[in-house]
Length: 308
Image 1 (tube, rainbow, N blue to C red):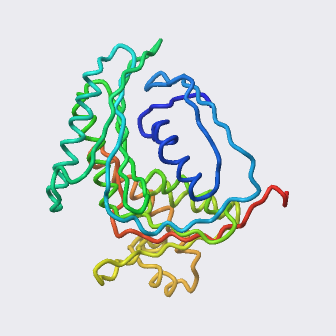
Image 2: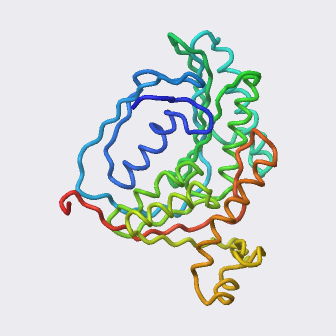
Image 3: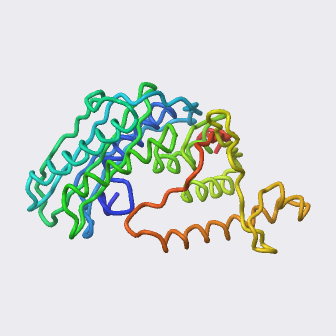
């Protein structure tokens, strides 16, 4: 594969090797490796990754619904090219301080959590750049990650602080996986042989789009159920009524039109409105859908090479 390995608005290559592939290996039986041959930095790109995998007959379904407690945070802060190692150290220090601050807000001692962020400097023939990836590990072997990339005009401590803020937001969302892995595993759930269940944070637009495409392409059936906390009933999902433009629940819309089709049509208009409102909001921060965590279930089709 060729292109950007460390670019903005996308997971780092280190995310794939440290989060995505280990998840697929543990829960789906996928034996795949990704070897970084050449790093492609923002904005030039030009990276090379060698991906290899062993053939398998069918993907295993999984049940990942318990995330446990935080046990440690690991990570890597690195710089390339002409940038000094001190910048990586500043990113790591800022991220550590932010995480320890969060621990204090939830009643945990600042030294109660193991935090180990390695700092690395790499040579690069054509580009200079910086990145940081943080991974939060839990007592139930869940891994939740967040990252940030250095940009012109952004100081190293700001990059580390931003990554830690994202990691905290991912944890507070309540899922067993982060928002990136949430949409990346959809196709594997659809192709797996049997029922897969995953606890996630509120579904992102990427995830909902992935579910729609996976359903159309494979025929797999997905179910989304909000998880109630402390006995509270979650607020029902609402969408813009194609006729009146008002926000209605699914029950109200089906009752009005005697059909579920307008509800399905309304999703596009609702998501377009969400994207528009995010663009009008603060720039530079990743937009996150708010709401309770959800239980995502998929009845996979059991795709097999033998059936082709």
